[in-house]
Length: 354
Image (cartoon, rainbow, N blue to C red; front, side):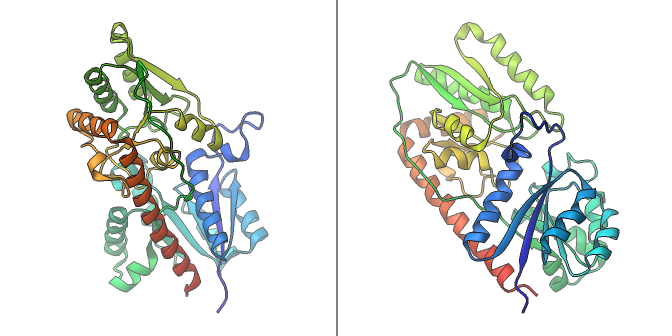
């Protein structure tokens, strides 16, 4: 049997500037996600590479260069009609479009359902989903459109969860400061829930008698996220006499971001919808406790809040403040358990592929 040879392909960010963006900064979180996966496969003995292209027209060159058996397109950026050409040029390649969102979030991409419906008409094109619910919904949609049986559906729509490197540290929690640093990092988008989390953090800071420094990334506002950022700024401007502060950080490379995370007291990622949440994993990996939501598949429920109830998020913050070491240890344990399972799923698929 021919051994699998995998190529991950990503699209270069639209605002790319050769003077300011390193390779690792081309596509930020998506690049990190793909590189984690690629490195894991290589470490597991599989032949895997990662490439970044400008647009659809560069795909043929990269595939010709690497001669893969499988090309994994990370996220939705290849127009379906392009596969009419690519499948003829590379008839033995299996193409996998890998989704990184649940359906409620994917619905913000106006072409998503249309493109997915077109993709499944190509025999050598497969859909990968990184979350069980998205997998279920896409399998229903594809099989309903194509009339596939269960076996064909499961073969064409595949579960490919996220991997995260298992390099964890610990840090002490400083309760003596007069203020508390709470982060809500990541691109500002709808459903990431920044404003309600900010309100919960303000409630929490008032209860423990500290001033809040609420840290966000303002450098990436996506998918009509501008109103969210304006509301965040308005919230803290209106409450400035209370001493709470909004702090904006520009996007940085992974090493710089991990260093920034390590300076936080608590990380917040109580999103309304999630499939994995790399930002939360980044906090946990550097020993910073996390308040997430049940949407994060590896997050410890005791330290999660209902993302539509600020009082519940505040309660999760209070629990975390009381038990920061337990928060970190438990989340690191379940993150490791999740990624161990991920490794097994990917390695088995590409070791035994047909």
